[in-house]
Length: 384
Image (tube, rainbow, N blue to C red; front, side, top):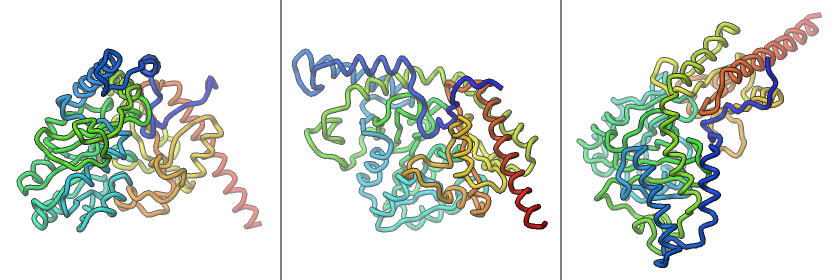
């Protein structure tokens, strides 16, 4: 087994930035003008921003005018939920904390919809919520879950919501570059995306707002972004966002290869330990994502042990201040804490190689064997 450096398998937290994106960001940082200025320097920066808007729109199938730049996915989600002006919020139980905590803070009435054992939204519960709240409601459902990778039937959800007169927001942060994404095809009113999930810079994202829909801005100021997001645009981040979007089509072409690596990883772990639990394996998932258990070993122990072996994975969402707690996503799937507390998320991406997967498998087996042998020795000593 090669030891040619650390292995990064935490793409769902942040995908490593691509060299071409770094170059684009560095070049944009040297531009002097403010994009709102009318002189040549300002017009140059404005053109770079509008070019990036077109690149991102091409990736997610929206018009450039529908795309509002934000400081990331969390701000985009907040803008959607706070700005829609709907009294009732309908969300799934497996949403990102940026949705769940915001919904708890702003909704007069909050409906949290259950999911089945694979993490797919209950349409029966959705229909009941829509019947109760109808045109007073905003439905917010993620396209792909950050922990399990399960993909929701967002187009069907949006269709049912429209019949009831509800608005629909989709947190699509995990999807671009991993599966094809079409804002127009999903039929939603708003959609959140973030650059760093597909090898762009951190701290830049966008909320896509359907043409003709009026929402209140979260941040007011000088009228930038069609009045929906005040403040001087992060030109360097936006240019990097656009560059990453243009390259993300290459990642889509590799989706089958990435899925094969993920499937091999899961199969080999099952050969090592048949009791490994792989969450949402019966549902449609992102091709790069595996949420799985090391039986009897706490998630935090696994993350730390693998890190010492030079392998970076996570224990669920990376947006929880480093805390490792029972996952609300896995609880929603019906997993007992004794099982969910032993889960890690392995997420592959554009730079992942077969060798890295093999090295992960070796590190996982070595950690599991070492911990198991230590446990057996302790039991034996206690019995003696």
